[in-house]
Length: 242
Length: 242
Image 1 (cartoon, chains in turn orange, cyan):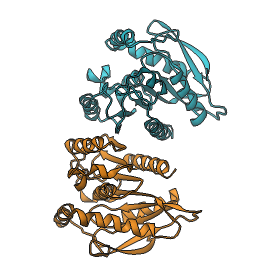
Image 2: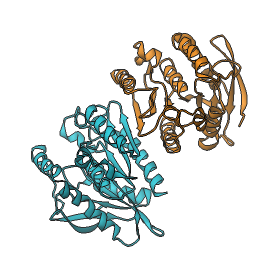
Image 3: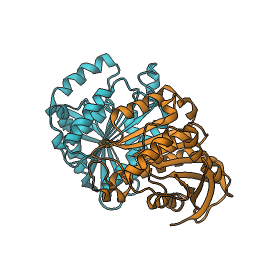
Image 4: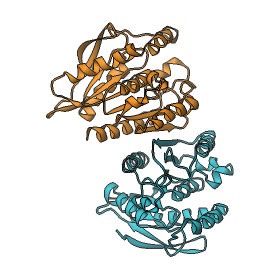
């Protein structure tokens, strides 16, 4: 499940991504960027990238967030890092556009058919990348909906990129007013967006490791929402890669 | 596309449903009730029931709403009929439980694996049926979310029936406060529900005939939302029929 290391520079950092290729690729193959949760490139994101390749037949690049695959272990440590990154739009965008360029440069990858997806802050990364690139789709699982360039009036940059966000209704990190504002700015810009809500579901519903935090009202794995959101992602990728 | 006529009595009316069977069914086959828009059993609902059988391999019963397949042609005519039916819970439930019993009585149908779906008011019918039966799932496309028994505190009756509603964000017939109330009562009752919203989409997005009304800000076919909602329905049916 390690994939093949793919190194790239982004925002002044030396990044170590992991590339996964389908067993048999025929012709130019679509590519998918996979952005991890805020804590950095984790087993969870690597496993999902591996499945994108083995189950769906796309080339997947699991992206580094903090350089040299640094993983942050605590919320108190990661929050100020996130805050700084969210207020530095060029830096945040660089951490999306650099792996996008690295993926496009790979042999066998169809540079015209690339999508991005991510978990938690990785979803926010995907949406931010949608505002400054021509990816086909940006997909977020329990994704942050406070996206810097959207909040700053940049939804027009999303263009024809299709947006899909899948959210637990009871996720305290993404309250209804944040969802409504996300929806408002995308609608005003005429973006093709979808939002799916899951009843009785909170944050991190795709990540079995979430249960280890012992905060079931905030972070909790949900096998049904995990499977359903994967199916909806699969459907949108098939649509945009046509 | 006519199917086989299946007659049943409901709410004192003589109903004429249309049954569609998959070309080759092996063993006990799941069944799906298909409820039409408020105007009555239409070509649109018949076509969807046919596809449930031919594409998905389930036995589908397209249900009559007003008796003898009466079709109502105008909104001024149908609105008082709807109002009367919505305020007569036993009558409304009868128009769901009677075709449910008729479908279960068919040879080759697995009575333990039945779901209901519907369009516009047909979605409301499906959700109402969920409150008073043990169907596996109730699915609504641009479905009304003012469901008599839910509004009256009967969400507990939904039990383990899985609920899926797919709604155009700009549908003036199903405004955000109605969605929020639907979500609130289902959540309080611990129901397994999903709601998907589509940006830039209004009412009747599954029905190409909607464009004939000449009211594109209210009723409009949307090929993308039609295809996507069908895929999400397909996924949930596969999940509950296992």
